[in-house]
Length: 101
Image (cartoon, rainbow, N blue to C red; front, side, top):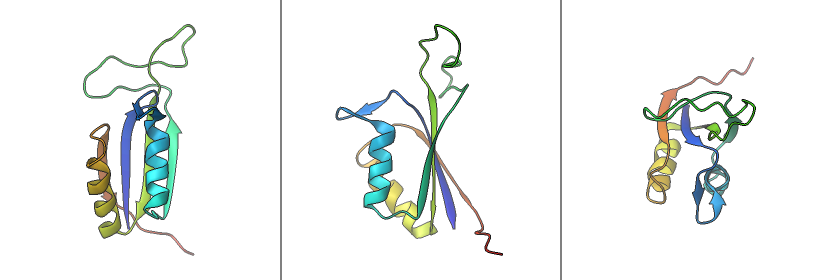
C-alpha cells in the first residue's frame, strides 16, 4: 500500500470549482480506496509567508492536505492522470502497511 499526500491552499480553484473538491471527485472517479482532506491551522507552500487562517482578521489562505491510499500502481496511475489536469500542489508518496488485527 502507498499513501499519497497533496499539499494545497484551500482557496485554489480549477474551472470554477475548489481544487480540493475537484481532487476528491477525481479520486472517487478513479476508485481510489480511501481519501481525506484536512484543513491546516498554520502552513506555507514553497517559501511563501506563513498562513495563519485562524488569527482574528486574517485573510491568509487556509493550508489544506489531501491524503489517500491504495496500491502503489493505482496511486502512481492516478497521480500521473491528475498531473495532466493540474500542476497545483506539492505531492509526496510513501509506503504504508494496512493494520488488520
